[in-house]
Amino acid sequence: MKSLPKALFISHGGGPLPLLGDPGHSDMVTCLQGIATNMPRPDAILVVSAHWEESVPTLTALSTPPLIYDYYGFPPESYDIHYPCAGEPSLAREIYHQLGNAGIEARLDETRGFDHGVFVPLKIMYPDADIPCVQLSLVNGLDPAFHIKIGNALQNLASQNVLVIGSGFSFHNLKAFFSPDNAQSRQLNESFEQWLQTVTTDTSLSEQQRQELLINWADAPGARFCHPREEHLLPLHVCYGVAQAPCAEQYEVTILNKKSSMYLW
Figure 1 (tube, helix red, strand yellow):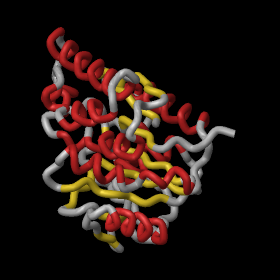
Figure 2 (cartoon, one colour):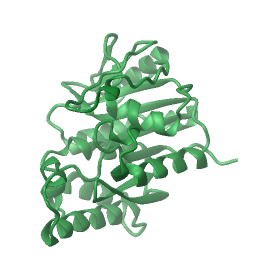
Figure 3 (cartoon, helix red, strand yellow):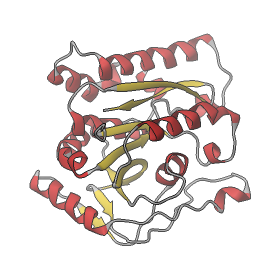
């Protein structure tokens, strides 16, 4: 029997569009469904979403978290999406203590629900909403080394059959999504994707080398074109921190006409 992966970084697409039948997300939806089908079912899920930042790592601690429709200008049905999965306050408290034991100040939030970085991909992967979930915030300042450290503190979750999902986007330049594609934009997109795939998969790299490359990701070709702001990349750093190894599987997808990727450890 296959063991549960340690971590999964996903590119979660644009707002609620993946749930609305948008053709620009069909590749992403198929990929996420395939990943969920082909790996063991977790007992619980911890999601690190690009759409929540706090001064310290913060965990949702409600047993019945509401959904946060944190997007604007979409059709009315976008605000009537339901995903009634349970929270897991006991897991949130355990993760809180794991972070504390690693010297990381953390906080429990007993009011916040799940943003679309959680409920959109989970509704695709686990549509029955029958796996409890906890959400973990990013940290203000967006320091890549610190987010790797957060992941380091969560290494034993896989042994408890808890899947860590980093919900971001390997390409996240909103202006570029709505601008005409050209040779330069394609080259920048493809260059960064190639760099990211090499860094995450190359078994000839030591883990110190891999970590240093991820910490200095902004030096990569096309980096700041693909990520003018890095909040959608840093969930990957948390996932790497959990695994501290080259990824086992990588998936190339096209989302909104941009090359994107996902990584399984």
